[in-house]
Length: 332
Image: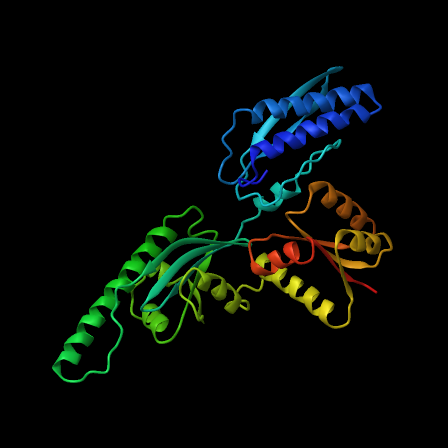
């Protein structure tokens, strides 16, 4: 359950599932499933959802010729992006197992003499942490001693602004959980010569300075520039999931526009899946969990690659909003 998912929506969904249990033929199974749902509902009645979301595992365990109901709530190590309900004889641990891997964390910083922004690239998610506006006056064309004095004051203002941003970045990144282990590096973006001056003149703490892995040109140094920095650093971040997912979506968009070796929309993609024609299945994390389960189950029969596409980057939003959350690259 993602942290953004309203508890009331989950409760309504579970109550509907409880009603559907009446169709389960086995009395024992029906009783166990209904008991598990009641147990989860009781826990949801008074719960504060952690900032990373929650995972609830509830079921009946056979032991010593008896059965007992157990319910466990787990706080995930990273933010849950997909709401998923599954009733089965086994628990689906894949989402949590994926989080157990060391999730790469990159620091993002974009800066010029007017603005700056700091963010974090955590897995596929770009998080804006801070945004700054400077009081640096613009250059003017007047000459004489007043121009020299103006330039000195401007240089002082730039220095103080860069120092302020660097101190904030140092305080954030060097004290965050995962530094230095999972913190893979810092990407700095902006326009020259501002970003180059910031990088080369010792504003950052030496421990953070040593972890700069890329300096890229980006047109904006507000929060929008954080996304631009990730796009500009694709070669640096080539092994990151976010870049791979962006490239997969771009491949799909190219196929739609050119040779047509793609499909989208649940009905059409489902039909293609059943015929074994889908090479790669793209599913938005916002798609109905029941549809996700159905699609993934069919995909597994034909060794179709399944890519879950979050909507926290522009290409992911395109899959969700333009193509109905379900798309496919076809084998034929």
